[in-house]
Image 1: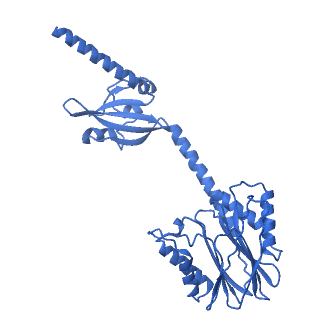
Image 2: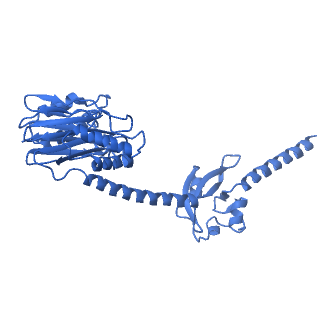
Image 3: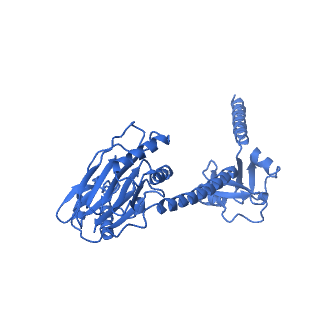
Length: 376
């Protein structure tokens, strides 16, 4: 009876071993077992066929056409310290991901390592294509960034005003934009805008804005109305929009006329004695309504008055306590700093970034655009 049990047990073990062998032979990955002396004592069917039925007992490196052990032999490492290791190998011009793990006997002693080699050549080729495409895309983005920056104001009308600005996109391409320009001998136009989103789509909207806004009209509301109609005629997506605050300064009569297309932060007129927020509602440049109904408003100016234009990126910077930099902190800096406009702007940016504990301006979460104009 006892002998019958032994036979039955041997049969079960044999069937189990064959089952495991069938599984391993059914794998597409190569599998081999290497002993402590670097001799191959097992190869699965996939590896044996790929190596043209190389006989067992050869050195693990010789069957791969090498005369010496690999410089980074992970099988030997696995055998001698009992850990698993990974590496990449090139075999017959193809890339393989190799995993080597120790094999123990019933007494827990390591007598060999098992290696699984996966052909990742196709994956490596795809990665290379992706890298090449990313490089091309980055080159295209750099060209687009150069183009976008070239559209920012350069020759400023400084005979009757002083003007400085800081433009910091949160990505290579920004969604903020501003422009200042002479309309005629006594009128200067300036607008600041924030478009939906960031990146390529946002930058294209800034190009649309600059090329489409009518810089000859002396009514900001009329110019925004034209821009709104042009936007609708362009059949742009419903989710796209542009917020624009547009102002025209009359340098002879010392006044500012302005209209707002949904810009959610108000420019600030100030001097040493007062400040005024140029608040006025308006619908963003979009295809949401048939008629936006923009209106013009007017305010008086004096020599020495300053006008601060900005997008919401600066006041929405948050400190570690989740508090926003906000309009009040901004006003406190502006109203108490008589320095030149470019110096004031840099102090605003430094204090806002310091408040938000931003060590690297490249890590800001939103575009930041600030500008300061002074009436001479």
